[in-house]
Image (cartoon, helix red, strand yellow):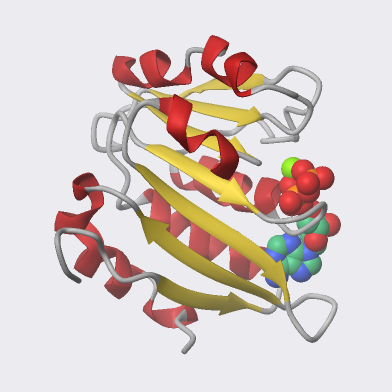
Length: 173
Ligand SMILES: Nc1ncnc2c1ncn2[C@@H]1O[C@H](COP(=O)(O)OP(=O)(O)OP(=O)(O)O)[C@@H](O)[C@H]1O
Ligand SMILES: [Mg+2]
């Protein structure tokens, strides 16, 4: 780590369920106001990751692809570090960054929310805050996925060691 920008963390999973468990470990490091950008191609596992976050936050409704609604909102019960709402967006169909800005995710997360944004890596400049980026890529086998977790700003620097420890079961080099 230098200048407050954490060194990216590498991880790998061999099943959708392992990806949900890895996502739950990430969720346990999240705080109200966080934006998590999910990057990766079609079918990489972005929504599967979101399901793991939803489960960790005690959300009972199935977390499904928000492709046609753009943003889904789930209420979070007590005992999740003050997170009251999970926002799950998919900006794949938005052609212009201005349309992403118009979703107002940056403002919505101020109200005790954590936002997960599929295809959100290109939208980072308009989201208006530090983000955790989780990039998913396919691996050698059908069910193998590789993850690179990176953060651009200072808000993650102070919890990077905790995140690294939480990801220990899936860490890769
Ligand atoms: N290790 C793994 N991690 C995540 N998903 C996996 C893994 N192995 C197999 N899968 C399967 O890959 C698929 C991932 O689909 P998912 O909807 O999560 O992808 P996505 O990145 O959200 O796609 P889209 O770009 O269409 O939104 C699921 O069918 C899941 O069961
Ligand atoms: Mg998806």
